[in-house]
Length: 141
Image (tube, rainbow, N blue to C red; front, side):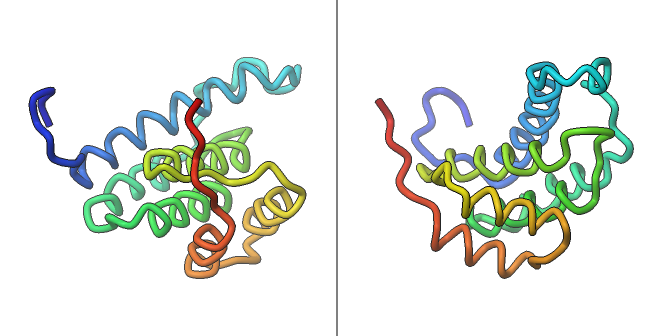
């Protein structure tokens, strides 16, 4: 999409941006963690498969809740990074929801759900339903 286009972003453009955002977000999460044992792991990627899969998924998922659910489930359970998989999964889901004008509240329930998701306790359909039910309109100041 060029700067003069008024159309919405395509699924492919969103997917490409998502992958770039995942990698940049992961680097920032690790750098900002303050955990000494994570130093130097900003670019430690075990497998780009789950990340590449998100880009491929983006070609046919136009629903931000479904896309965020895929991202959350894949990254948190497939562990593409040496460290920071849960944080990166949550960050990625939030980014996708933010692009759609939504966010998740900073609550114990949200934290619990993310932990359960990372343990494989929730499938993609359940994650999607939870995101729909628990997301709120993103306030822009």
